[in-house]
Image 1 (cartoon, helix red, strand yellow):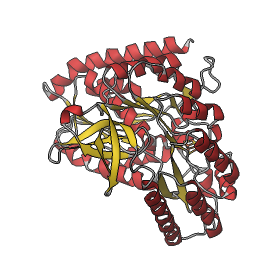
Image 2 (cartoon, rainbow, N blue to C red):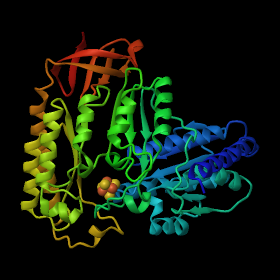
Image 3 (cartoon, rainbow, N blue to C red):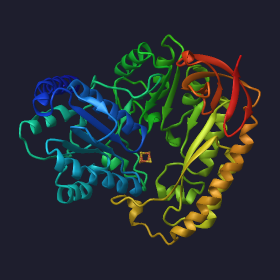
Length: 467
Ligand code: SF4
C-alpha cells in the first residue's frame, strides 16, 4: 500500500474519533473537560506531548498543568534512566486517589518506558486504575482510545511497533511562543550497548523533506524564531530514502526560507557528522553555531565496548575539523562515567579529552543499567561510590574549562533573540545563536525580537547591553 495514502486515512480516521469525543466528553464531564499532560525525559518527548495536547485540544479538552481537576491525565514517560522510571511510578501512584474520587477520570501512560514489556506488565498488575498503556508507535490513536473508553470500553494495552508509518499533519499545541521543536525523524539504528532507545523507539525513519519544510514555514508564519530540528541522530536524516535529501541538504533548504530565525538541531552522532555538514553549517548563516557531539568516553577501548563506531582519535579529528571550519562554534557533549569494565585509566582519558576540547557545556551521567541492553550483561566491578568520585572529578574539570571559556565572550557582540522577560527586574534574557544566555535591560515589548547585544561582564551569567 502507498504509505502516504495509508497515513492520510489513519489521520482522517483519528480526526473522526476526535469529533465524536468532542460531542461525547461533555456528557460525561460537563461543558469544560480538562486534560493534563505530564512529560518526562528528552525534547523528543516534549515534542510528542505537544502533539498529544494538539489532539486533546481537537477533542475539546482544555489543557491544564495540575492533575487535581483533570478528567484525562497522561504521563509521557522516559526509559533512559532508572531514576526517571521511579519518578514516573511515584507520579502514577498519586492518581489512585483521583480515580477513587472521580472514577470517570481516564489515566494513561505512554512513551518509551511502557514500551518495555516488564514495565507494561507491572502497570497491568500493580496499577489497576491506569486505563491506557500506549507504546511509542500508537500515540496518534489517542482519540480512538478515549472515544472507546468513554463508550464503556475496557483497559487498553497497545504496544505494537509493527507499523512504522509516519502520521503527518497531526494537530500540535506548542508550549513555546518563539522557540519550538520540529521532529524530522524518529527511531535509531545504532544500538549503542548502553542505550534502550532503539528497542523502544524502533528503527530510523525520516519525514519527507516537503513535509518538514511546510511545517517549518508555518512555524515561521506563526512567529517562531528559534526552531530545533529533532531526531535521535539527525545527521543520518534521509539515509536510505528515495528523496535523496541528506541532513546537510535539508539544512540548506531551510536556511533558504525567507525571514530572520535560528535553526538548531539535536542530537548528532559523531560517526555521521561529515565535512559536508560542517561546511553547510559554516555557509548557512541561519544555522546555529552549536554542535552537540556526544563522545561518551575518551577511551577507545570503552568506545568499542559501547559500540560507538569511532575512537578517540577519530573524534578528536572531527573536533579539529569543526573548529577549523566554524571558529565560533560552541561544542557540547554527553559523557557516561563508570561504564561496565571502565577503569580509572580509561576515565583519565575522558578527563584529558574534556581538557583538550574545551566544551561550552557538558551533560554528564553516571552509567545507569538498562534491562535488555547488552551493557546490562557486562561485568561491572566498580562501586557506585568510586564512580561518584570520578564523576565529581569530571565536574571539577569542566568547571575550570567553563571559567576559562567566559573570557572569549566578553566584549563581543552577538545577535540575540529576546525570549523571556522579568517584569520585576526589567531584564530580558536571550540566547545567542550558539549556547550562551545573556541578560540585558529591555522592555517586555521586545519579546520575540532579535537585537545586537554586546556582552560586558559575567556574574553567574553573561550581562550585556543593546547596541
Ligand atoms: S545513537 Fe546510541 S545513544 Fe543515541 S539513541 Fe541511538 S543507540 Fe541511543
